[in-house]
Image (cartoon, rainbow, N blue to C red; front, top):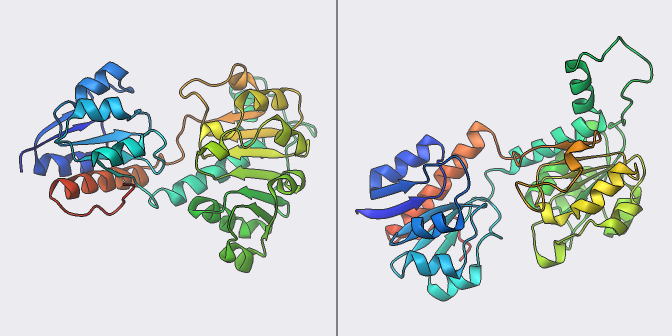
Length: 320
C-alpha cells in the first residue's frame, strides 16, 4: 500500500479512519473553509487519489497538477458539475460520487423548507425572539394551508419521487414535470405528468429536484415565476443556478409569489442582493444532507470507492 491521498475538507471520522488504515500518507485541508485555487492545485500534486467536495472546481489544470499517477477523484456529493468529466476521461482518471445515500435527508429537508415557508416559521420565530410579540392576534402571520393542496414536483428522479411520495399523508394532489414518466408516482399517488408551465400555474407548492445541466440552468426564471399563483411557495434543494436568483428576489419582494424555501444558491456562498433581507424567504446554507447519519455514509462511500480504485478494484459509484 503506502498510497498518497489528499482530502480537500475534514470529513466524519469513520471515513478518515478508513483512509488512515490503508494509506501511507493522508493530508487533509487544515482549514474549515473551501481551499483557494492555489491551495487546491498545490494540495493535489503527486497524489495517488483525491477525495474532493462539490465546492472544489476540478478541471484539466487540477488533473495536470495531480500528475499521471493519480487514479481517482472521489467526489463527496451526488452531483458532479464541479468536475470536468471529459477531461478526466481523456486522462484515464476515475470519478466517483455518492448517490442514493442522501435521498431521504434531502427530501425531508425540502418538506422542512416547504412547511417553514408556508407557515412563516422563521418570521414568527424572529418576531417572538425580538420581544415584539404582544399576545395572540387573529391576523398574525397568516400562512398557507398544506393538507389537500396541489403539489408540483419538478424532476421526478430518486429525490423528487421520494419527496412526492411523502405527500401522501397530507392528501395532496400531485403534479410532476419530467422528461420521463414515473409509474410509481402515478400508481401510488395518482400523480399526473404535465408540462412545466401547467405545473407552475396550477400548483400551490413547487419543489425543484433536477440536476444542473445547460438545459436546467435558470429553468425557473422571471417568466416561469410569473406563471405561479400569488399564494404559491417555491422550494429549491437541487442546485442554485436552476433558479434565476435575481428574478426570484424581485418576485418575492413584489409578492408575486408568497414565499420561497432555499438551500442552494447561484454563487455560493454568496446570495443574490436583497435575498436574505426578505421576510418571505427561508434560506438555509446548503444543509439538505446535513444529518449525522447521512454525512457519515457519504464520507464512507467516497473513501471506500477511492480505496477500491487504488487497490485495482471497481468502485461502487462510477461517474467515469
